[in-house]
Length: 604
Image (cartoon, rainbow, N blue to C red; front, side):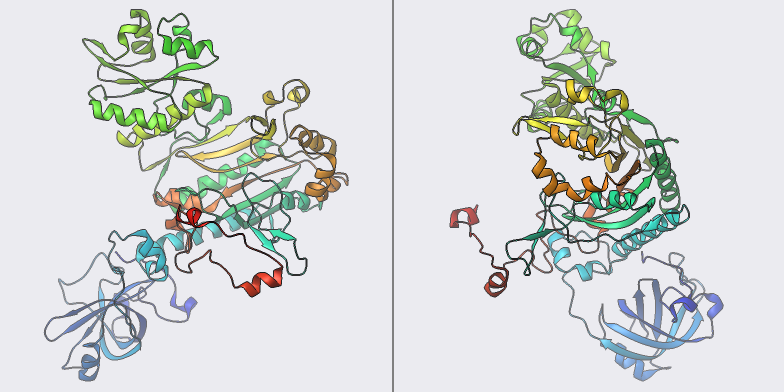
């Protein structure tokens, strides 16, 4: 169905294909648009004229307007027309209740073909499955489709809602530069060479993090912008190399101030711009440790249960060597109950086992529970008490399938959270009309990097930490809790932020744990560190993904569906064929040389 948008013609200065109603009958009108469909009934010719506001039926009668009728005989779908005629009510019984203009039609008296159109490579006037590569190559045609226009318009409305909400609360919109210095932010930078400084590069910002903190030092205590960000990292369904986020920062705040602000915004946007029900208000809050223990992931989908169950204590003295070796090596054994799946076939068990292995697990033990007992390839290696602990002891009922992974905690968490998400999809456990928000708090400030043999920031290196944990920076840095908070919705990380470090000594201490030398700090973070010595206030903020939120409330499974001109899953712009080589003259101007891959590398 054509997307309808109510817009007052007085605002646009023209009538649109979604404007006319029964009250307009008798008016002489001019409409512009695309031919959505043409129907020749052997005398009368009907044209459905379309623009982004809707669709109007125009009828050409050879007895009334022979010249116009002759001209319209040659038009085809997607021709661009200007039509003149008289509005009239449709004959009784021919009304179309699916259209806002369905009570009327325009009796065509004149027609001008503004532009002809080739036959499109896919249907524009029907919502049919089309290969994504073809859609992206002809994105300007794909965006004519009502569904895609609806997504783009909804994205616009969400952005405007954000602006109005923050304007009403005293925030100032400030643009920050797109050409900055390369700094470590977690992903590779996109680099821009400078012709004025050969051999030197700008970087496109992964986020305006340091800049917004500098605005707090400048005294602009409530800043925001809808910012473009750039990250050269592997793509996935909810990620793009360039994306948009609501970026904001506030002075003299605690975590609660930022979280309450964002919670109010997201409740209002969900209620106004979607038909989803919010599962729980206020949003539940889980510590990072609680989320990992219960769900194996720090962005859990709370629309369904299937929580991970710790069974290591019950297996402490097990004679089953596969479990015993893991426990002796400091690992753990956890289980997941898949309801109603005890009848899984060997092939289906192999499928989920392979899924666990791809997530890093060495294997998967399964236990099918029935009224007659437990069926499992490893049951003979376990005592009766251990079998009970692995089944009814964790709530499994007859008809359920228990999935068990034994490994190091990080591997167990990834494997079982992957299986949980898979069974949630397979069993349709999540209500698609529900939106389950939650906050994840108290993330570890630092995590150990085995490869680099140093501490690294769990989120970003500017996050503050709880005063009670300050001494742990010396004795046990991995136990320090950050003043970090992430908003999660239906298993997607929608955004995150923190209350920042606002004293230079504290910031330098964290940088030191991350292995930065003093000289390196001055080069990478000199402006921020200097600013912290000039009366920097306590401050905190957050960055919320705009594209990802719109994807969530539209029910799309891919972020590319809510971005006007996205890159494909390999980060390639198929419409402009980018990235692409540039002329040697351009490289010479920048004094750059390109190291070409070998033929075998290119073929790989």
